[in-house]
Image 1 (tube, rainbow over the protein chains, first blue to last red):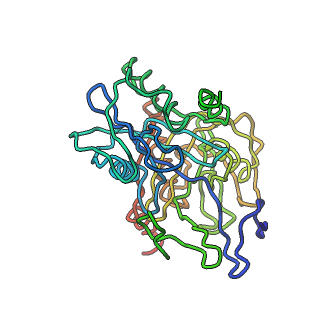
Image 2 (spheres, rainbow over the protein chains, first blue to last red):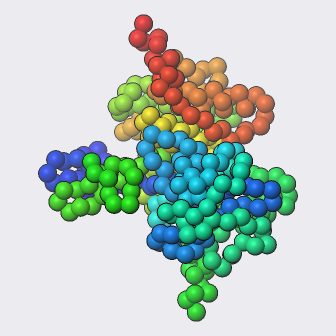
Image 3 (tube, chains in turn yellow, purple):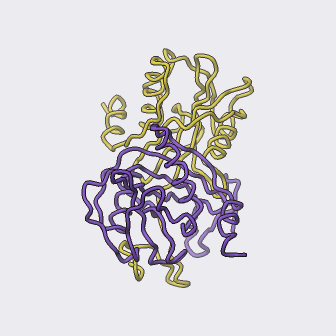
Length: 176
Length: 176
């Protein structure tokens, strides 16, 4: 690691060609697919957190918008084409340098099913959510806030930080 | 460029150590610093767009939140410590793989001035904004929407895309 001229942080600099490989936070973009009073979850067919439930989401790619990325990830993980409605939540996860952007999305049909990335894809009402088998704290936080807002009938943009303590708390049942 | 196993896009893969260097969109985070009916702009002391006016903003760094990054960039470019209020706008710029996050910010004092990154730092009322000398279309778009919302007295989250046509249109006066 070297601090380039005019910079104030160490960067990965290629010793052969001197290219600076900047390491910046990555955007994870995804959806809350809505069908009547239910939402769509996927059971992960890939690591990390194989076998646990999550909302469709993944790393945003170059040359797409956040909404396009969210729709693409939903297609890849559920087989379903959704209509992006509005940005619902921005979560900072500074200790792993990620920013999550979660959009509410409208489902027009039930053409979902298992994919290369999901063992199962299923609709859940609030009462059916597998709270103890969610893959990530950010997904638990998204769902908690979503169902709370739905009760009030008003969805407000959520901006919050996810801390390592939230992961620790979530893992506690398995660690005991 | 090689498509790694289980992936579907070409990536930069190091020929020596096989590390995959993923190239994902970068977040630019910044502020609209508010002082009474004025906002704070910086005249760029660095390329690109040297000498043109902009809002304080820059690339988010690892291990910080979007709000911390916005406050840091404001400090670096204006010398001022601001208080982050709320997320005002998310702009996708897919053709350069950037996502802008702009926060409204409260100024508690007038301790701003030129920095290594800004030739000048100054307060502007809406009537004084140098519309023809703004550095980037995304800044013009942010300011246009901000002053329009301020008239209505209600600031709503803005989510929009910036296209190459908007850059072309903005550059037109200089190209003619």
